[in-house]
Length: 299
Image 1 (spheres, rainbow, N blue to C red):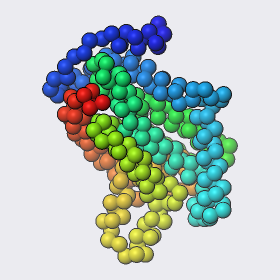
Image 2 (image 1 turned 30 degrees about the vertical axis):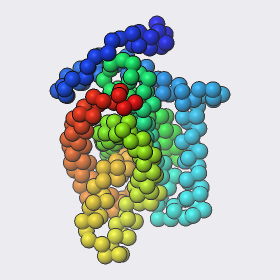
Image 3 (image 1 turned 90 degrees about the vertical axis):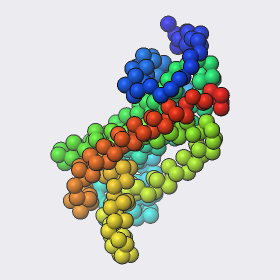
Image 4 (image 1 turned 60 degrees about the vertical axis):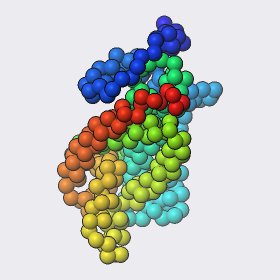
């Protein structure tokens, strides 16, 4: 059965009332029952992204390589950002890789329901599927960038500390938990106020430069100390989940770091941020269910 046949079958399904707010376990079972559609939407988003391109999915490898070379040469060598940051190429690209997972996922999730207005208005299905499919596509692109990053580590022979590899998966999960929580809220809000998607894009740009990607956390701590800022301001900056995820990725894949490049108790901080993120995900899902009842009418 082709993808078009599956979409045709979905279009024939009758409309069903949304009703109240079912339990999270019930919603999860319903999403799992629609896993085929989730896979189709994820694959469609990836195919549409490179439709008509001669190189197709090769762009998923070309783009991160160009980003790596651009940031390494312009920021690192020309503007001197590499001073004081050993193995700057690996440092900056590891931070960019985890940030791009956050950025691509959240940016796509914010517009996911509006971009699938035709399906939302025609058939009943769990609305959570649309932001989830957007995140699924971003995970695929992240996987391609991670391959480039690992390839760069091998080529430059900058082997990270094996004990730091334990930070790799928690960093990814930390990003995904917060992306799903924020993506659910933003995707629904964007239906009622279309400016949300554009505001999200601006905020993502600001978040990139506010994260320790092109500069080190040690530099941030030095600046806070130099200006005499209270210690809690550095703690606030450090405990930002995105900052922790970037630091965790550096800890896993960057060979040039020392103890001074990371805050104390990084693993504990990430664990606490993860627990808070799971709680926020439940709250975000509850809010999403409250808003989803009139999404089709608004579209």
